[in-house]
Length: 213
Image 1 (tube, helix red, strand yellow):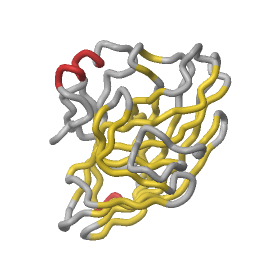
Image 2 (cartoon, one colour):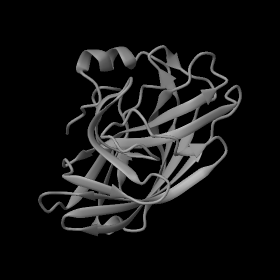
Image 3 (cartoon, rainbow, N blue to C red):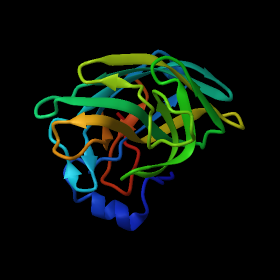
Image 4 (cartoon, one colour):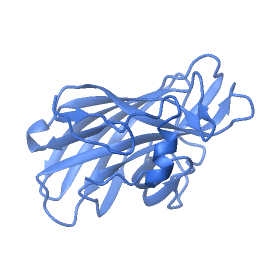
């Protein structure tokens, strides 16, 4: 299974930083309708983890057809002390098989495919609170601020019929950060904390693998 979040050398270096050790994956099929899984995100830059910067997303598989999967999402900005302000401007992941298109509704209604994210690398898809360009680095002024939450749906489309979908390399993008010195933007790496369906697991970067529940 692909893991294109970073070249091998860069991934090995990042694995040594606190909070960037997991590359969790989850596989969903048509039998997992209405099942949810929770992803917890830290915050970091090229210099390391940022204390207090955090968020959480609950994904729920709501529909699956031969050529598309639809998931509901609920994003919560869980940042705390010493962070006094932050905004989750976007989130995304890699997919297997590779998607041919994506759309979304709600708080994160803008999509971008095959883009680069600072301190992450190339990603298959991201969902943003604003900003019309095909870039996962920005999110306009939209998203979820500290202590708030936002929800909606996202649909992933495929050129050919698929029987299951694997999601990996979960990330969030933070902007408007205060309380972290001179740092005003960062990213977060996601770890699957709970799942009520599908199969999930994590291995050290860069060798993401599948471990059944």
